[in-house]
Image (cartoon, rainbow, N blue to C red; front, side, top):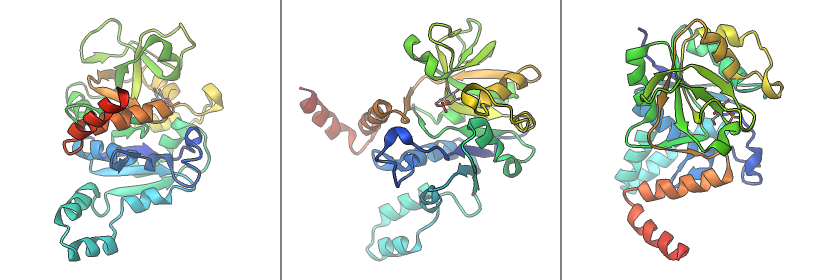
Length: 289
Ligand code: G1P
């Protein structure tokens, strides 16, 4: 079984839901507590053992590339001022030389198309896919749990978490045929089911482990829901010939692509922060009271 070494993170989205905040700044650079959303996601990937991150970017996203580069002037200044802790934190957050790639999705043709844009950089090996809007707050890096599960199941895996019945129409939904196991075989998969028709309330959480055969299917460039090249459509085809498992996340998932999800993420991550949590809890209490 080939190990999971590389991860794809699509960051080409326009972020129209966050205007005017995202007029000149990519939505992935909005901060949750003290780091950009995208840094939280890259941290999760690196904790899970990912060696190389492929960013699928678009116009106006250059600052993401700069963010994951080293900044010699800043490092020198921190060094000369004796800011050892800040310097060490900066170094720890930055992937090493050659551990990132950037390629562009030239037109907004859908998630399936964004993933397909990474095909040459991924090559013929299984890979992880992380959607940067979705933050997973839990005891361990969720992608790490998924890679562990992959060691048992092989094939393809999708991260899932339970959502309220009224929210199922906003997500990809998978059905595990009644299994209560953390890792379960997927029986059905449907992208954004019409209200009241979802086969379960397990939503795709934006974490995937996929075999490179997906690229062959994506290259057909078939349009699905909303006229976009949907990843879920190719996964459905792939599921006919390869195993697909769901891995349930038992922590909290925050959809930072929505304003409320973004605000909730900031509160939850601040409360979980070892330096800020205690004081922030007091502030929250007095605000709410
Ligand atoms: C995408 C996926 C969907 C998944 C969701 C998670 O949808 O297609 O299956 O549940 O991400 O955020 P999007 O949010 O891009 O519409």
